[in-house]
Every structure is written in structure tokens, then in C-alpha cells.
Image (cartoon, rainbow, N blue to C red):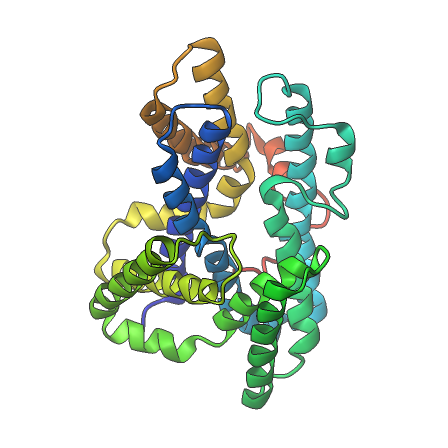
Amino acid sequence: MTNRNNWADYAKAIGILLVVYAHVARGAWNAGLPLDKESYMLIDSVIYSFHMPLFFFLSGLFFLPSLNKYGGMQLMRGKLSTIIYPYLIWSLLQGFIEVFLSRYTNSQTSVGDVLSLLWMPRAHFWFLYVLFLIFGLAVLVHRQQQVRQQGVILVSALAFWVLHLYVALPFPFDYLANYFIFFVLGMNVTAVLRWIENRAGSWVFGSLILFGTLQYIFHHRLRLIYTDTSVLLIVLSCAGIVLVSSLSVWLSQTGTAVWLATIGQYSMPIYLMHILAASGVRIILSKFLHIDDVTTHLLAGVSTGIVLPVLVYCGSQTKSLSALRYLFTPPAWRLKNTSA
């Protein structure tokens, strides 16, 4: 059987590349660079229809093994170190840099905006905030591993997702309703993974056709985008997850594009730093070099958003730059890694 950690690294890499590209493109659009509006809106909607559900799904894959190994209390203590600590550090760091550079960026950030991080996360850091809450919710509702209980949790999570389409829930319940279902799907996907592993190539081909067809129907025939209220959104998300999972399993089995798996191993530092790195490149290109070519901005932004965080993280593991470790790991209460 394919090593789950190995193929999951490929999936994380695909997901983080989509995250970085989407944020770079949005930054270029908000800065007034000459992107083609129709293409930009379509690509943005396709990506956002599944890429964040993918990350919650991948987190759910490792929940039950971690819960059985560590127990609920120790598991959540570990998440304080691996999720909440970087959330606090990078929310403050990026937030105050945005305050300082407000005249060069697309939005005006105040000190009050930055300091509201305990009840209202900013920018892309909402993912870490919500992920921690989802782990806590999963620990509460999944006290013992029983097939019947898993079915009840799955149905309840689906009902919660449908509810959020039609009822305006306050934060963070709206995010919990939107993403808990994908975490639960990750917890219950073992049998499907076995089918994929047995015929990965066929699954890639079939899921690609399904994904393309559903996206065409959703965006072109129904004229919808990912922010519209539609039950089809969960189908799009699941189709994207199956496609990325199938492709990742196939890449893992064939040993293709090993560099992609390496990117996946650094998905957390990339997620934490890519906005600062890519925004810095955009500011340099636009404000100082007066370069407005969209292709240059996209290539430079995505490349820097991937490479610079990896270099900083790798540097933090060396003796000479060991102080940088505190950007990613608590200095005094490092815990055993219990996360995927």
C-alpha cells in the first residue's frame, strides 16, 4: 500500500502551489495590474472551489491515528505548539509589517486590526484559527472509534454544511460549518484510498474528466462562482479532492516529480510566509522598478512565495540562524509533533 505520508506530501504541495498562485493573482488584481478579468475570475473561482477543503481533508486523514496514539488532551496540547503558536507569531509579524507598509500595499491595516487576532483572524491566517477549533470539535465528538458513531458524525457534519448555506451563522461557526465536513471525510476515507491505490492511473483520468465537467457546468452553464449559494459546491470540492488525491497517489507510486513532495513537506512555512514574500516582490516590481507586466509579476510572486519561505525555514534549522526557529516553534515548551 502507498505510504500515506508520502502521497499526502504531494497533495500538500499541489494545494500550497494553488494557495500561493491565488494570493499572488489576487494581489496583482487588487493592485490594478492589467489582468484579463474573465480569465482571472474563472481561475480564482475554480481554485477556491476546492483548495481549502483539500487542506482540511488532509488534516483529517491523520486525526484518528493521532487521537488513538496520544489521546485528546495531549493531541490538543500539541496543536497549541504546531498551530496556535505560529498563528500568533505570524499574525502579529505580518500584521505590523502591513501597518508599517500600508502606503505601499493594497489595503490599509491598523494596529487595532492586528490586535483583534484572538477573536477575528486576519488574512490567510484564518485557516490556522479554524483548524485548531476543528481539531477541538473532533476530539469532543469522537471519543471512541466506532463505525456507527463515525456515520453519525459524518451525517451531522453534512447537515451542518447545508445549514450554513441558508442561515447566516456568526464567526467562527460559519467557518466550522463550511469546513468540518471535509475534515470528517478525511477521517473516513481509508476504503476509498485503497481503491485509488489499486488503480491510481484510472482514477486520475476519471477524476480529471469529472472535475472538468463539473467545473464547466458550474461556471459556464449555471454561471455561478464559488461564493454563490449552491449545494453543488460540496460536489465541486469533493471532485477536486479526489483529483488531487488520485494524482498524488499516482505520483507517489511512480516516483515522479519528487521535488513536489519536498515542497509539500514545507507547506506550513510556505503558508505562513508567502504573503509577505510575494507582496514584497510585487512592491519592488511595481513601485520601484515600474514593471507592470502580469506574467513577470505572477512568475516572480509565486517563485518567491515558495522559495524564500523554504530558505528561511531551512536556515532556521542551522546553528548560525537558530534564533529563527522561534518563528516556527515555541522556545520553551516544544512538544512532540502530533500533527499531520
